[in-house]
Image (cartoon, rainbow, N blue to C red; front, side, top):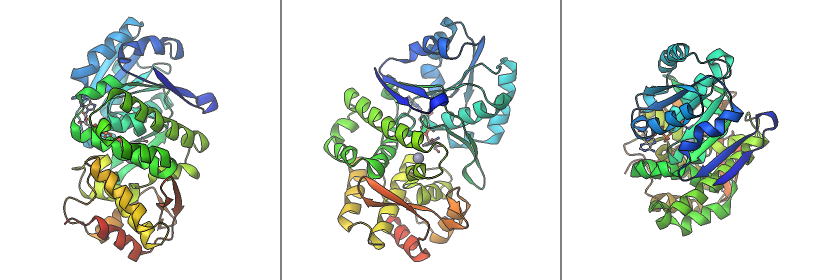
Length: 362
Ligand SMILES: NC(=O)c1ccc[n+]([C@@H]2O[C@H](COP(=O)([O-])OP(=O)(O)OC[C@H]3O[C@@H](n4cnc5c(N)ncnc54)[C@H](O)[C@@H]3O)[C@@H](O)[C@H]2O)c1
Ligand SMILES: [Zn+2]
């Protein structure tokens, strides 16, 4: 087992990574979060696969445990869904000390985290991610959210988990498309912070796509270390943490515009290509560096263009509604080389149009 610590003083927590960890959930929580009751929130794909093991582990550790199952998919990240679940928490006697556990991908994690942040003004939150996207990104860092019709993740709270338990064996049942989508955030971490990680992807494409267990465990650990370091430096995104939004400015707009038909990671891949193009237009990086990003995403089976024609005006409207807007200006994270990015808010409409042109459907 590998363990990465997220050093947040009073809110510090461990990320445990390894095969077959799920049955140890209850035992690991018994000391950190003693309580009579617990809730596990999962979705209707994940619950049939792993719900029983998780519940059994919690019960074995002495928790009266309720399993709550939501419909899979981004649509479930809503206030309406949260509202229904609050009723279930009341019925399950979830009190101030009771752990509320997310068992699933980023959708379940963001929604469960939001519920844990708000129920009784905050109860212990535990992340048991089951997608690569959540393993390398969503489960770490304490950002929780639900969507609003005005845009993605507009309603939320910072609420750090008490523990993240990554059972890498759960990736065996994950669909091919979801594995690839998760890799987009991993490439993102390489571009923003770690040229070595980026090159490691380039050298290990086959092993990664072949789901080599050791290679995936290393990938997850390296990503968690980067995310933990960034989050520990800037928990509430006063500065540095914003670099994690690389690829997300245009990516989120495409995600909202496509009404969530694409995976989050797929939109991030497209968004990274657009952002890299903007950096080239601004002469911040040579075209060859942008090409390297596009080529790696392509080899990993990720889209590098929008699947259907996109309108720059429509995307701009979504970008202006995004949380990343400051004083009416859209903020972009742009690479200055692979391994380093800067945040800028003076990207012109022409430069944005050039970025969108680079990802326009063929
Ligand atoms: N909070 C953050 O910091 C953060 C960071 C990145 C992404 N996110 C959010 O995460 C979400 C995307 O997460 P995601 O890609 O994990 O999507 P997801 O949760 O929708 O999971 C993808 C699909 O895989 C299924 N699934 C999950 N685990 C499985 C398994 N082990 N075996 C078989 N099927 C499985 C799910 O039911 C779903 O159909 C977005 O809403 C995004 O905004 C949040
Ligand atoms: Zn993301």
